[in-house]
Amino acid sequence: MKTIKVCNGPNCSSKNAVGIMEKLSSFFGLNAGEKDDRIDLDYCRCLGFCSEAPNVAVDGQFVTNTSPSTVIEDIETKAKKREDIHAYKIDFDEDFLPL
Image 1 (cartoon, rainbow, N blue to C red):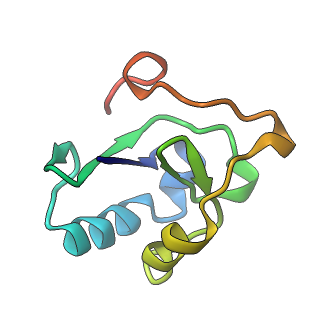
Image 2 (spheres, helix red, strand yellow):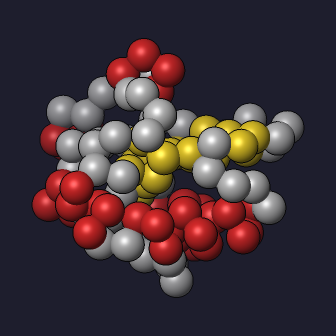
């Protein structure tokens, strides 16, 4: 199962995190906070890449500077580990509380 979390921190929120979630919800047929046998989809708090907002985390890898029109393609092609800025694997259950 893939875990997809849309950052809903202040900067990402101001740059259309809701639109990104709407696109993902429509594509996967899930609402925020729902999961099925393929996808666990929800918001999370700030991922810490505010200068590259809006951001999405996919199984601990990051998609930055995404938009509702590109998020699906970006997840497929651009998800990457962010070792260059000292990112760490996020445990969403412990590191972030659902909004």
